[in-house]
Length: 430
Image (cartoon, rainbow, N blue to C red):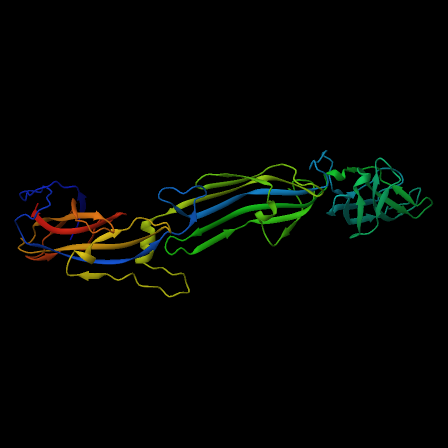
């Protein structure tokens, strides 16, 4: 049987059975009501708002975090990198020009691996060479080394002769010319490739962090189980600030604890933005500085209806066993436990509730005729004992299959802060 349902406000007083809305019983076929209900305690789940809560307060089930924050440890109180000079040296397959080198090739790499306020540790790698096919004036190439030489005082130099070798080099003699030298079989023995790269140690920033945030956490609407999806990562290293290249992955992942005192915070109800202050912080070396932005946003508001449905239709996460929906209690009266109510949201963001349904039993029907059933609704403030006051009519239609018929169950309207009761029903043909 088709059952269109409509609720509309009604007036006062009685009327004839002519499809007008009425809070009174009209003459015509018999109409009696039966109610059933189920009740419980429901609580919102999710994340709190970032600012003073709304009225009423809200919870959001989805949290999204994106952005990149950079932190560096600087040797001076200006936290500056004064030039575009690189901090790495790299020559791969370099073919020196000049008669002494012939057609030999050499290569080498140097990169900072550790630093403090006074010195930087470099590590050599990729040192290799190919021997010239015919002798030069100095003979054949037999070895290759990598040299850091102070621009201001060329007598200060540091030489790497093997891969993996690490040397602490003072900042005080910076900047340095960095180049390769060859060792030869003939007289003279050593020939330099010449100044190739100038490295300014003021650009070498220690203990760098790059925190990349790409995180989603979500409370499932059906059971508040938390799902997390993250490709966030932390990269640490020594080099030029900010650390956009190089570094190594830190398995501990991103953490705001390492940015304490280095970020500004901007709050909206559903958005929290952290931005690097770009200030140089500290009273002595190492000085810290942070740049970048991290945005945390909330969405998918959890509602009282969602919370009630979680109680009525439990959906535990596997491997827990499925649970049956909360059972209905069928009542002999639509008063008492037959009413529907939702209390106002508490400070703990919870409500007590009862959902209820009503159906009508009709007698004296004409088989095949259409009837409109009108349920008379009264309500009062939830949690009070005052009288119920008429506020509307719930409509249902039925085509009579026999002289007597029972309609399908329909929900009694339920609104936060109110208790609603079906007082009576009447019907008329249409």
